[in-house]
Image 1 (tube, rainbow, N blue to C red):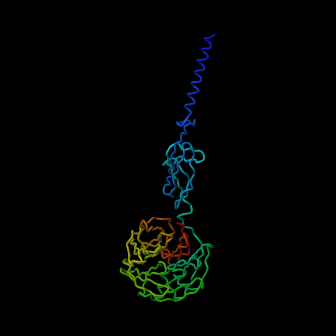
Image 2: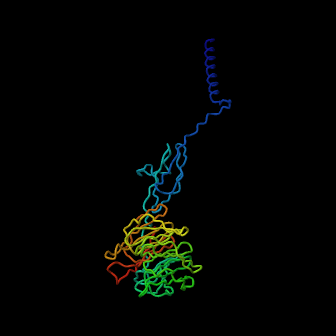
Image 3: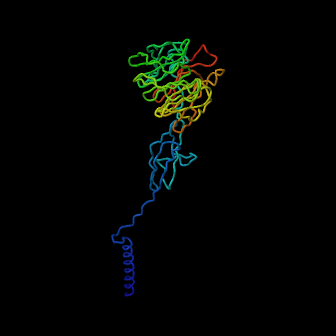
Length: 394
């Protein structure tokens, strides 16, 4: 009996010791009895947009899901999905996939169906025409003069894709004139009139639908001239020979001022402006391209045009990029070129864009974020100038 009692006492002692030791293990160093807290690991998820806009990385706990970010953007492309590998084989599922390590997801892109394309619009309502003048004022485009000889002047509304005839050009009939806009007014001047080269210069007011003759061009009457505007001033260059006339027009005081000569000669050049700089592609089947700074009154040679040298091309700017295209290599053959090129003044690089049906002696201008090219002619078909009109989405 005493032995049995002794066994019970031993067992009870063991149980009490185990309970006591467990109690000690469950306490922190202050005897509070709290269990140790173990933080889960965290990983970084990097988003490689593959040429698109920047997407911030995320910190995600082990075994949890990454948050789907807003889709990145990329000019000329539509975002598809995020992929697990550079080869873009397996898409990441933000609803199911969990993060187990540091990782990078890669964006996949598909070419956009509504960028870098030409779309045919309503034909020019003034009929077949070449060697005309085109420019824009606000959200409307304007086309007039040219050959067959006409004083008709037309307004294009891209919102309704329609043409409206406006007040006839008030000067003499002409072709190969210069045209541009300054603020809310349009200007047409120079050009070939029957028997001589005109120095007349006219202002168009779309509000009153009226023309006002301004100060004649102060340089000599010149053919093969180009024009553009920068800010509140207009500029005309005679590009026929090296050291040609280059003049600035101030509409406020109605005065022409001689500026630094355009340093490159060339027949059939084209001009446009981007921001506060002017640009001339020299023509004469060469590829020279020059930038004019009105603040310094100086010319700087830029990267040569990347397409073939040509004459009688068209040019315009959309936003911070310039565009040059169409024209002919020579007057001896071919139907006219249709390649179009984009110029980036920041990188000084040319990039080929979508092709337009070939032509030369066409008109071109931009309205908002779209470009427009139309009319012109093809070699060997002198009696049938073109009437078609196209819209470019960059």
